[in-house]
Length: 82
Image 1 (cartoon, rainbow, N blue to C red):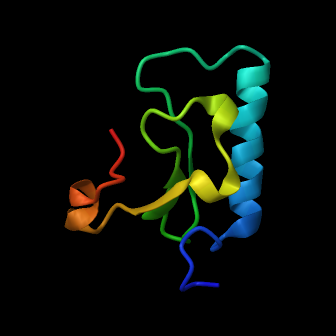
Image 2: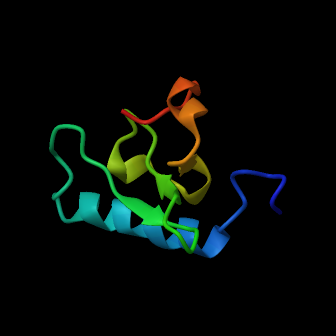
């Protein structure tokens, strides 16, 4: 599964996607540059985050992006976070 970026950390992806959708259901999702993130590595350098511009109610486990805080090229990716 590690070769398929949107299938790695499937349980974590499912849990955080549910948190996004529940937050929208509770109407607590409107803010500027709002996001949730979840560390998926022991050192906390790799984490899941919502893609920029995606409404919380439309977040799915497969739409989350995985970021490496130690990779300087992260912000050059087409799906870079805000």
